[in-house]
Amino acid sequence: MGVRADAWLLKYRSEFESYKAAASEIEVQIVDALKGHSLNVQLVETRAKSPDSVAEKIRRRQYGDPARQFDDLLGARVITLFDHSVEDAVTKLRGRFDVDDMRSINKTKALRLRQVGYRSHHLVLKARKTGLGTTADILKRTFVEVQVRSVLSHAWAEIEHSLRYKIGSGIPEELGRRFDALAGVLELADREFSGIEQATVELVVSKSMRYRNGSDLDEALSTIQLLAALKSNRPDMRTLGPHGLVLSIEDAFRFAKLLQDCGKSTVESLVASLTNNEVLGAIARYAELSDFPLDPDEASAIVAIGAVIGIEDRDLFESVEAFKDPHLSEALP
Image (cartoon, rainbow, N blue to C red; front, side):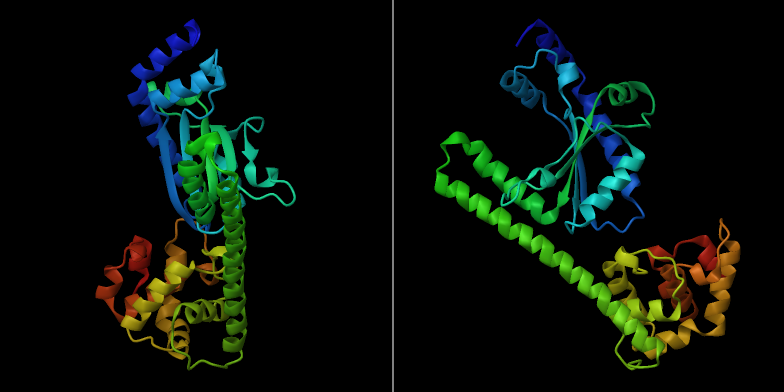
């Protein structure tokens, strides 16, 4: 491998535990960077490249100066539910880390017309916040490669790597074509799932307009109905979900169940509660108690739903982690 590469590899082996600690720190920072944003992030995982994998890559790539040539000693994956969330996640990461654009690549955009295959956005970056001690030393000098892709792209990449890549040049052409065909099918599936999500948002908007006009209020309260009722009744409410929704689909499903448990079984019963003086008073008090100036109309859906449930069933309210904000509890009558 060469004297310099041998010496560097020996040092890397001796520091491997510290590299693993640095990978854990990067995971914390990535999760924090993406927290609070409606990106449908399903998984964040990090790793330090194993010494044996490092040695193999040095030999294969004939690295003479590994300290400068490696950009994936620390690696991370961010897996989103939908393909369209990838770019949003990348934007958030760019805002938190120092990205080396010369080393980074958008593999999806690199695909040519009529070409299918690996779809992922690779960011090569360094942490701005490094902490103290050995971990800080490693983060200051070491690049992190972050792969951001959708669940379906991730599934294809993992299977393709396990079969086609490891088989190597000996894979028959017919099997290679089958891999490529599957990549195309999954790309279409990604687009269709994104389309279904957008259609769901459009349904919420359509129902909210009908509720505003007093129509269909007898509908049973469920996920879509809850989102539409909140949008209709409190149009200035802070958005916590994708595409302007006041909640994510998952949270709306969970809160609809909780509201049903305390007797809000129809849209009409929820709207009656949201316009109840006690609930409006609790939301207004929460706005006053908030750590930052807040217009009551902009209070989040969690605050409004928490006020409804807290007034109807205090025990149920106190059992829900999302309502643990002390200001919300204090705001209840």
